[in-house]
Structure formats: structure tokens, C-alpha cells
Figure 1 (cartoon, helix red, strand yellow):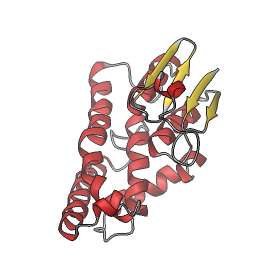
Figure 2 (cartoon, rainbow, N blue to C red):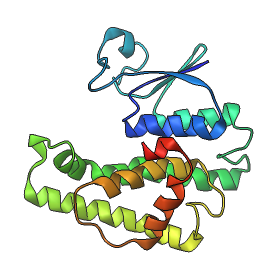
Figure 3 (cartoon, rainbow, N blue to C red):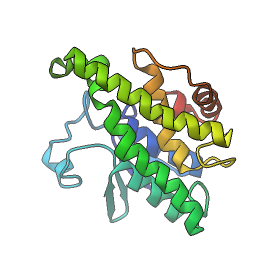
Figure 4 (cartoon, one colour):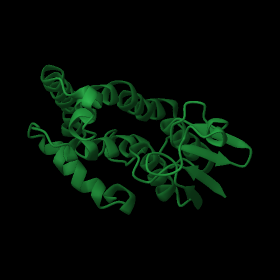
Length: 201
């Protein structure tokens, strides 16, 4: 059986749990991370030297990096679900997954650490304002895409891109800050909320 190491509250762990839910995969999960077992324990570091969750164990295979784990689960067990086999369709999904990881994630780091984590090192008002503006700007890119598709990120079909971006949308909506009115994102959020308890949690 698959084993997932990481607390369910982690945004990156939720990507993996949601993927398992969509693919009907059974798994065992162990709580690791803040508030639970420390990821700097030697046993955990042997699995992931970055000391971060999630970690997936599938037999002798050990994987870290949440988007990579989700891709693997789809490729190994998905039978074409969530991640298309056709190169062009797959590239479209992976483009948005990479955008989430490289561009969107970087845009919210300062604002999230300041507003949600209340980090003393992230309380500079100018940097916070810039962080909020940058985060909202990146979400505007997603708003434009969703206006164009009218459904999910890559079109009519729900894909892996929607899992990784769905949890990011939820984080943006829950942050205590001013946000533009993005009606396509609001409709998208409601659409995703009907899919799985993992998203609602």
C-alpha cells in the first residue's frame, strides 16, 4: 500500500491526497511536520534530505516534491486519468503545474508568511504591500485563463493542473487581505469544492 508522510493540513500534502482520492488509491498517512513528528529527525532525512513534506513511499520507491509525486501517481496508476498521454495535451497540463510551482508560489511567500504565519521577519509594510500586489497579479493570470476556458484550467476536463492550482486558489481566498473581484476564480472555486472532501478540508 502507498504510504504518505506529512500532515493533512499542508497544502502540498493535500495535492497528493486529492490525487489519490481522484484515482481511487488506498494509502496510509503518517503525520509529519509542524505540530507532529519533526522532519529533521534522521529517519525522515534519510527519505528526504530537504526535511519537507510530503514524501511518498511506494514499495522501494521514495519520492519527494509534491507535483512530481502527483505526476507519478497518475502515470503509474491513473490509466490516462488527470494527466493525458498525448504529448501536447500533457504539456498543457504540466505547463500550468510548473507555473503554480515556479511563479505563483513565489508570488505569495512574503504575504503568506506575514499575514497567516505572523512571522516577525516578514512584517515590513512595503514588502507586504508588494507581496500582496504580486500575489493578486499572478492570480489575475489564472483569472484570464479561466475566463477563456469557462471551466477548468486546461479546458472542459478536470486535470492534475486543477488539483495543484485548486489548493493554491483556496490559500489565496483564505488569506486575510484585499483581493480583486475575480468572478471566474470564484466560480472555479465553487466547482472544485463539490469534488472532494480533501479540497474542503
